[in-house]
Image 1 (cartoon, protein in one colour):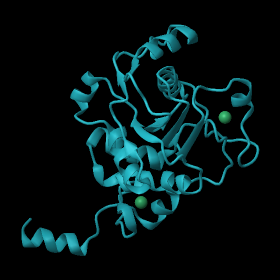
Image 2 (tube, rainbow, N blue to C red; image 1 turned 45 degrees about the vertical axis):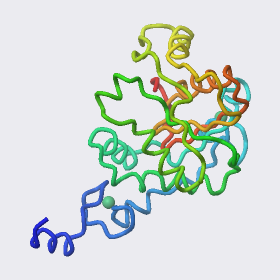
Image 3 (cartoon, protein in one colour; image 1 turned 120 degrees about the vertical axis):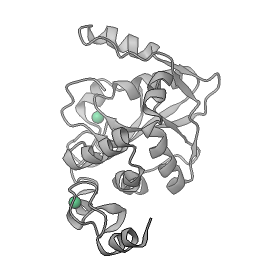
Length: 236
Ligand SMILES: [Zn+2]
Ligand SMILES: [Zn+2]
């Protein structure tokens, strides 16, 4: 960088990663956007992280039909600001947004009971997808979360052995079976595993990984996601 560029950089703060205005707060965001990047006050279900009646109350859906995962922590609901940051990470490999993305989730983690012997599993990408994208965004997020929590990252616990998502035209149970077959666990897995991902939409992918892990010996599987989609209508 020449001296003019360096001087400009010092005088004009980098644009906010969400809105483009000059950023002055931490994590490369402007004060208004930084204020948005904290967990919502809405009480959420401890199992699926969707809104529920009161803090800590398991929602009717999870009571009626318990998912294969045991707990979910989401930093944010999936709204425009967080979507912007996730796209910056995923499609532009802008790793400068990692801390801003993880901040609300880390706030949630601080107030939740976290099994200290759990290991972190970044949501696996199929090798062909990994080659195209060049990196797994979930692995980048898991590294940040590991640094703050001291938990170990074990990316090899589950592999994605099929790339294609099931056809939308298939029925729900056929889709679930196809998704289930997409994952393969290592011969031995730890008892407690936390799956890390950027967005949780219907939860079907985390559910498939949790089923795979439990079939391989895990007794508790949690999910840590940067954002949770409200009113999920499509598959993730
Ligand atoms: Zn901003
Ligand atoms: Zn629930």
